[in-house]
Image 1 (cartoon, rainbow, N blue to C red):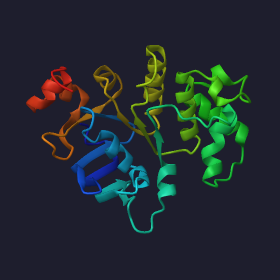
Image 2 (image 1 turned 120 degrees about the horizontal axis):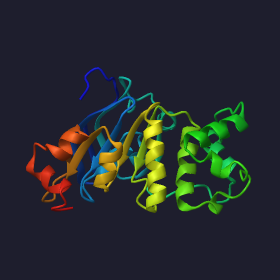
Image 3 (image 1 turned 45 degrees about the vertical axis):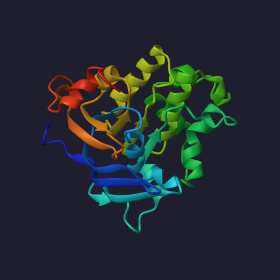
Image 4 (image 1 turned 30 degrees about the vertical axis):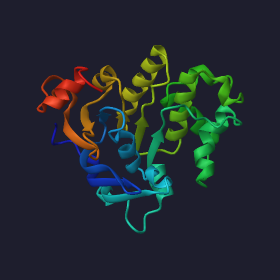
Length: 260
């Protein structure tokens, strides 16, 4: 890894419980600015739970418990005086299934995050266009901004959700299996968008698609939960190293499809 690249986001000994169940143990990772980090591993190993700790989304589950630190530019987002809403504006999230607001137009969907957070919108038209351009969907929707968001295809809806997140000017974008419900053409467009966006921000993506991780990620973390033990990181390094020169035999078995 390039030691000259600043670690924009860092987790230190992150542990998560849901009630009495310990689901994540001692996860420490570094996410450099302007790089994509992929989180891979079998279902149930804690990847989606972990990515939600990076902007405090897991707190929305009543039984969730947390220990450790998540630092954004050196500041702990779990500090006592830190507002989770502010955290989620800086660290945006795109989910597995596209979730535009069904009763809103395409334009209003883009601006919805700003309105819900009470952020003043000074130039809505410009913000809508800029956000849709950054999400690589402007040319497809510029003449139908007043139409319902659900008039779009699944892939377009997912890029609209990306635009909605980008309108908040986040520093980090978290993506939890953003292509799992999409066809290959839509997946390719999302991946192209990710590669364009990483020039401006830190991106963390959960994916079950090994080829996707190799196409878009600069570094990769392999999560595993074995024999009922909490999920943990088995291996973390450059994507090339994790896939082609893994240190741990379990990593080698997983990336080559022997289990998971």
